[in-house]
Image 1 (tube, rainbow, N blue to C red):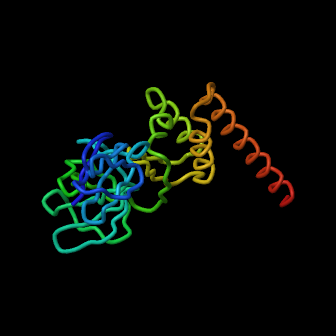
Image 2 (spheres, rainbow, N blue to C red):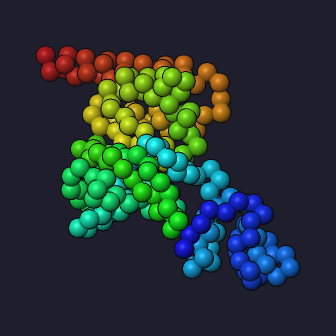
Image 3 (cartoon, one colour):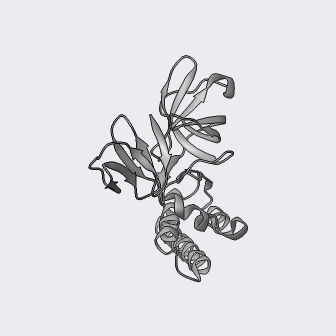
Length: 214
């Protein structure tokens, strides 16, 4: 069984040698916010990772599809689960999906609802803590990247991002730049210049090819 623990919370009545924990009076306490697995006696740090909240929009990959449920990879220490009554159609292993969080149950499983299959494209992963910077104020950053590359981009709060159409490679380069320089000022303008510069270079290259053909 898995449970969320906070710094100072008792995780075991016995002294255990676990990273990010301390032993006092022969009992083990967590020193971080984490996910404690009682069976494996392991503590997974959650700081900087995505913590599921109700109605969070996430991107995932179907891991396994059975008769009434699908398990979902979520770029997190939790497994996603889609129950048939929350699904509108059958999905297959490897499918990309967008869905909403219904709840995190007592076993540490994220119950998902309103799943939607995303056709084609590709998925990349970034640190969930960078998602807000990627979106930008009033979604200005993500819109700029999407319009500048002609790429449809759907980000999940769990740090998984689906991209399709347009110049996907350029969109990924821009996203990686945002993540790397998220702490700096003037980033929106630099990303805009990056997209314009690459687009201009592409146009010039295409014109040269046409001239050679003539």
